[in-house]
View 1 (cartoon, helix red, strand yellow):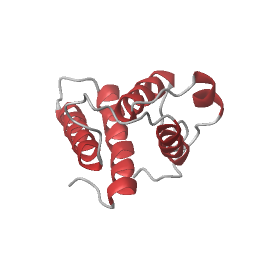
View 2 (cartoon, rainbow, N blue to C red; view 1 turned 90 degrees about the horizontal axis):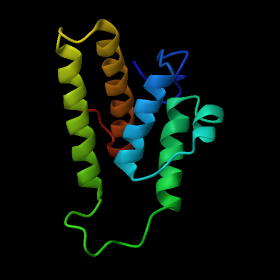
View 3 (cartoon, rainbow, N blue to C red; view 1 turned 30 degrees about the vertical axis):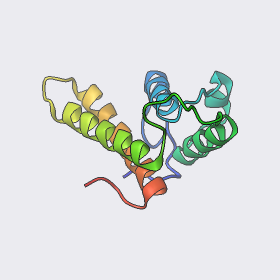
Length: 125
């Protein structure tokens, strides 16, 4: 099980491609950009990743976009995380995908579950 203190490489077995894909998903989710040097030097655990995402989101929060059709709010973030978890679970369960790809999807689900639990107090069942 993934915890906030899980080491991304050592405990989750992520390689550099896994890291890049996960970081890109986090960046898309939060509307942020994480510097490559920060990823390489500072983000070693799930907690580091979550903290970095929240800090950058707070620092880079623009003024509200009055032209947006759907503002970013807690419910839309929860829905996005839930949908992504369900997509990764479906990918994980598809036996036509390679074992390594399914294992990576499993770890991504766990990271998203930890984020969901940290943000909303529960995991998606």
